[in-house]
Length: 161
Image 1 (tube, rainbow, N blue to C red):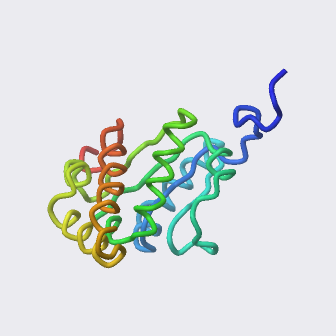
Image 2: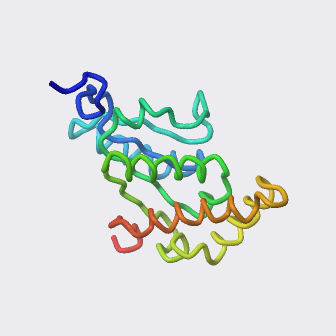
Image 3: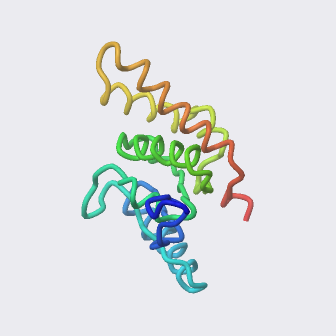
């Protein structure tokens, strides 16, 4: 008999967690994505730095989701909060074999994967503002690993549509 606390036995409260940065992208893209997913019967959880409770993703929320959609934009790497959340999403993927779908909105996937261009400059600036001294290299390495891992998943690039 399986334990009732097993993540596979938890009720599914959300089908999709959508992680993103910025009110402008919420109005221009995420709200339409959320509406389209809702129209076909998916329940969504919008997770962004300006949320009512901008704390780390709680493990129960992730466990109650089937898929995480990470919307990468030029401003995504300007948010230490988003980069920390992405680390948790990648850990959740590795631990529970859940799906992560990257979406690239007005940014090329290689800029995310390799942290280059304006995305890379913002990434470095955010790391320098967030970490001090010896923590800088380790923090940048963790964030870089999460970005590269997410960008290596099959995703959706809006510039192709």
